[in-house]
Length: 114
Length: 114
Image 1 (tube, each protein chain N blue to C red):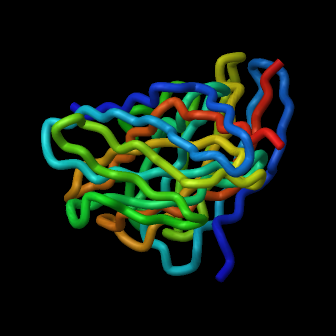
Image 2: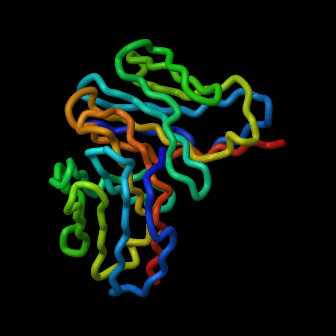
Image 3: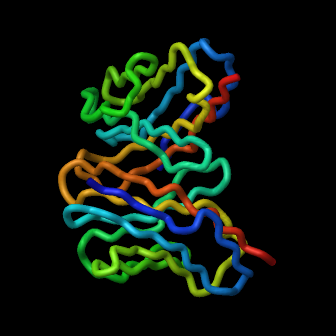
């Protein structure tokens, strides 16, 4: 079974530029999550989707971050404009359903903002 | 409100000696608890989970954890460390039902000395 796929794995940009990350969850998984992991900290939930609807985006900085999952499968997370403090690893995770206990994580996309 | 505290940011052990990674949680209701491992440049992998069944939980690669409600602890142990155990370990708390909103600890980096 293929795991959660993320791209790009690494991205370096200047502040105020934009960047987009892509995630393809495990086939058939209805729930998709984006987490932000800053160096030295645990992952923090940014947004949770159930199929193509948003369940929780309370911690997403909506002035600069956006995410979509238009067809209920893959998802894109965008940052525009980027700030220095956005340097982090962006992790995508999926689970079979809304009340599944185990999350399956991708390898992450590491963003460096200069 | 829920929170999780990992008491050690770094732990070093010699190969073949026991491993103890400490985790304390705070939850206003019965939680689910998890341990995840993250090897360098890899995604998070579930080691084990507690979901109100047996208090001693066995996971993969010889790890186990014991849920102690009176001490609000969920420490991770392994009888004998292997070089391949060197990684970052995260303790996670979530409500038992409804939305699985994972709250991550800040992580413990385990170093295994030859």
